[in-house]
Image (cartoon, rainbow, N blue to C red):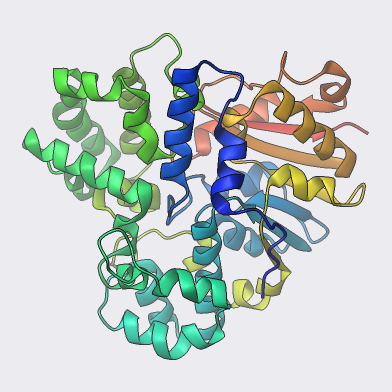
Length: 410
């Protein structure tokens, strides 16, 4: 069973990472509201493209990875690149429970149809019996307690896997609200998934989706930081994402990339955004770890994952020097103060082997490290601008302004 390397509660860990105590009172209150929203299940699926990650990270048999868990998809997908070990950490107890459940399902549901029904489709009534009879006996107590506990309306959480689990969580609920808002303007977001070509995708977006962002209600709603809590965007990241633009314009540009820059028949992020789940056809796109051809390798290598309920920086601080060589930070740095960034990169640099690669995303386009992390630390790292731009363009999730790659100098 996974290690749980923290005695702090999930709420305490999240508040410690998010709340800017030096900020004005109004900003602190917004931060605390986000921390409260973030303590439950946020991401059922991670929203960073593991294929783009693996290309930039050049994972190999000697790679020792540390990453943030989120929905767990990317750590599992990295196993297809055959790394030596992956340390997976998260502040959120619900994410830890989700990761544990996915790992157990991969171990125990050896028939691909059963696994696909439980994790990929995740909306069949028989999934409840699958959980009770085949998965629950192999889960740790904390994970069972979470899934057999009740949600805010009194339903057992595991029943989400009988109704479409990807419609749940903070992000799933946000997408659901966005779909309802679209239907007010007589738009079914799933229209884009029926496009036969990228030209058709562009036409549908320009004619049907783009005009909605000019609506007064949409501009008003997206003008408030709390409106994007459902995307997992805290107030500090909202400011970075908006920059000098109206948020509605920023969101339109990000959605345009998702809808138009990649074929929808090869982009499972588009299916999640516009269809609220993975496609059910045999050719429907899925994350690497859920693809039938990859599952034997993923199952065989699953014990290489060490899952921890902990703060990323604290795990590094407790690790030996030169103990990792691949660091994936998702967009967590957008939440951080300069002091937190300095502590984090001090520990990354201390624990990094020669040639280590660090990858992260930002809401805004530029890297946020220059001017915020001391030059004595940053000068140890080479920012790969061209490779970062390539990774940004390749990221099919399309919601971030930049993907950034740093490599430790010899």
